[in-house]
Amino acid sequence: MSESKRAKHDRRTVLDRRYRKSPVIEALCEIYFSGSAWDETVPGAFYERWKNEFP
Image 1 (cartoon, helix red, strand yellow):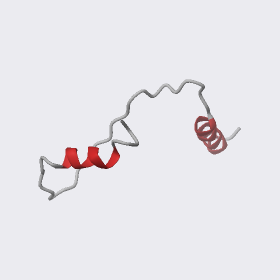
Image 2: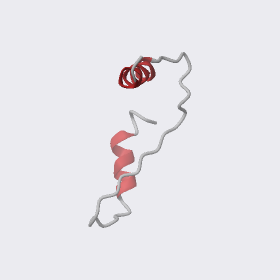
Image 3: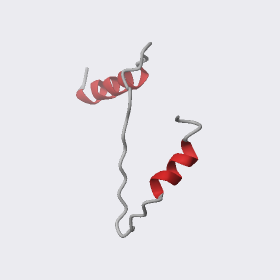
């Protein structure tokens, strides 16, 4: 199998894989915007928006 076909096959296999018990317990994502000022109310506002979907 050529390298490009193998890479495409490997990528598809990883994306199509399903687990009975997901290995992900918690995930974190940080996004930084240049020039934005930090406001201490942001985490509370974010939580209020999403708390019912992600308690």
